[in-house]
Image (cartoon, rainbow, N blue to C red; front, top):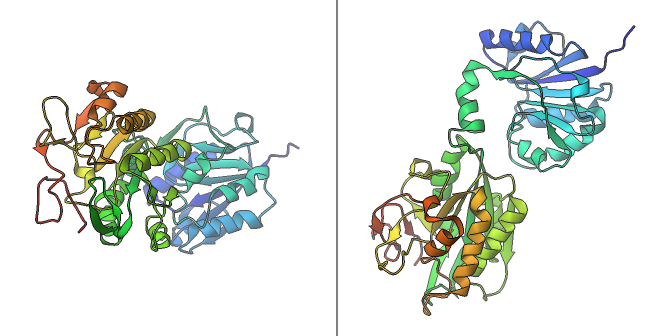
Length: 400
């Protein structure tokens, strides 16, 4: 008698009746090379309508912790599969096609995860429960793990109900999956720092963070996986800053010997070191209040985006607003090189850190054909201090 390997199939949440039947058939048909046990984690009683012998079901709101606890407590299985009923398997899962030394995942997010018992603790450790993400978003922890691989030679389709979700969030019409929102510069200042124009301003993220979530982070999170990164100076509010923004990575600088350019250089260096999984970067500042959701802006996701050209620019050089830069990952190192060039070739003695004239250095690195302006209108950053002084249509500087 052939002993089949034992497989624990953990089903994460439910679908409607029609899609449930499709999912059930595809799952049963394509896991026949295993001795299967089914476990359901979901919100309601619909698990009873599955024609499967569930050994466990759980209705706790916190599915992730329940699943991780279940994995930790069970030891009788050779393999573990976590699957959401959004995917329909169209070919059979065969042990010989798996990498037993790694966590096997299907797609670029965890619609299906399968691993050998020897990788169970590795999986539990990878999915960091302390991070405030759902299980579906915790795949970001897995892809940073060298013990992860993608399942090949497995045909699948997506349940109709979630096809739009899949298209938008995972493949996305822009080819973008993960967006980094990077905040760089002074996060809190009661007037002790000198700005790039040798002036002192009072400013704080305390007055702007709600706007950042409303206009940047939350809207993009509807169709992408958004991650925050911070590079700033230490203050009495640093702990609160980190608690609110929950950065994937951050750099805290000390002292007063920093300029906007030197801080940006450190910020981009940190992104190169820690954000290799990101597809698109949005780099901005803490003291900016936006008028509209950035998801509505005219970004070109394949090019380097400036918001607008400064109205004070001259024929000899193009000057741009330097409060936000947005670009695909392939331009990250080019952006760093351009900032270093700008730092080595300052244009105005009275401004120690500006990046208004970075256009020509970006163009040298990537070519003008790869540069895009969100607006073709000449607008102004300089006078945009306070909402009532509307010198551009995108933002104002929240400082006094």
